[in-house]
Length: 465
Image 1 (cartoon, rainbow, N blue to C red):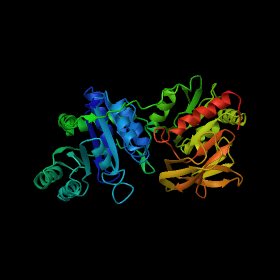
Image 2 (image 1 turned 90 degrees about the vertical axis):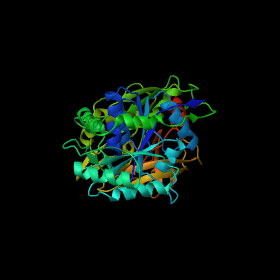
Image 3 (image 1 turned 120 degrees about the vertical axis):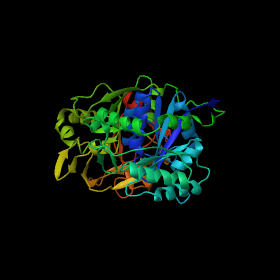
Image 4 (image 1 turned 120 degrees about the horizontal axis):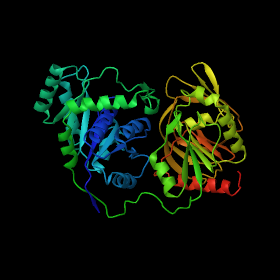
């Protein structure tokens, strides 16, 4: 099969260069402004940027992390999700050549080459002029196989600043400047930790995205950018691009997904993989609802329970309902923020907020990251979700650390990469609960959906661990 998919990678020289702001702006400008069906993708383990891209485009943002997912799955996932798109916008991560080693393995550049995709570089021009051309020339010479489709200048101070940089780029590199971005006052995406504030917590998200799109529409040659995205070769595969297992062995199961202001970190592929197997998804708001619906399992993703701690802690009715159902065997799979919610309390900015009290473990928030990066775990504990001895990849990113815990806690995972909960262990086991700092991607850890269905089916039939 051959697929003609207009596509472009938005990359930078480093993290914080403006990739997300530009990508979000382009998603809204092309989708709402030009009426194109835009499908966004994010390279790298990320939920917040993906949320903004999804909101701006009106389409789910899918992950193309080449460390978490096998190369053939990355390729297939792109074809599967972008096959009907008018434009696929892929936001890279970190610097364009940055990977996990000196060879740049799993870098944005390697992804772009695998997808035969042109790269548009966004360059932070703050306090620099002619040197930009030297940086760009270095990028071109560093990897001649990487196709640079154009350059967009960010943080331009004024027309004089822009002209000097444009002239230098044209003279020394021959690369095409597609436009420039000047900083808009009072429309910054508010940052938290090392990234953006989730759009769910932003008061004027639509107004902000529209303002960003209006700026790029007036300052970037969108028609030329689209021409670059269409001047790409066909992507070819001899295999089916069907991505999910559709055997429907989850029919009749109801999975509650806690999705609200506190918990938003879910890969759409995880939810799609469950639905493909026939599982019914029921969304739950832990900050407002007073009881649990009729469900066979719960999935609690990551998020920011600490910044929503007041609402979570005050909703005693819901916490009690969840704890009561867990004691009766309700399966719960929790990641990062979900792990914290299942604990005794969260200490944040000098105050303590009681959580569900399901697990004998308490957390406190630090000013800097306690863990940030990929993980590799081996399943050593008995858990219905994974077979003992299984090894898989995931990622962790949290500012919380354990303040205290019961020494008799049983852990499911031994970390060969990453920090986990304590002393290189992760994944607290309690009855049918598995709570971990490690996030997983269902297309990289195929056993995850199997385990969710297996444990939920067991609970449905009256089995309690």
